[in-house]
Image 1 (cartoon, one colour):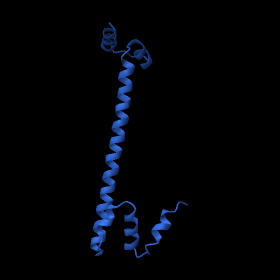
Image 2 (cartoon, rainbow, N blue to C red; image 1 turned 60 degrees about the horizontal axis):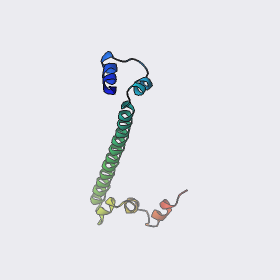
Image 3 (cartoon, rainbow, N blue to C red; image 1 turned 120 degrees about the vertical axis):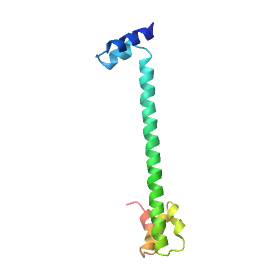
Image 4 (spheres, helix red, strand yellow; image 1 turned 90 degrees about the vertical axis):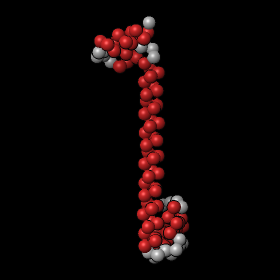
Length: 105
């Protein structure tokens, strides 16, 4: 019975408020909640994949830069905190500057 009401509303091309559709179709609120939840999960997944891609790009770029500058330990570009030390050493800074960067202002 309830599905028939929902089908009839959709067939007529209901042009009212969405809250009226949810009130008349009892399964519509669950569907809408699931849709919104799915979109949130999809957005978070895309953001994580994008962040991983950016991390890999920068790690490869710094590793290539270190190899071109003939730095012996170019693989340090893949370690999250140590890559800051690598960048500073490639710039000619002392290794102790890493600790100053880690101190919050």
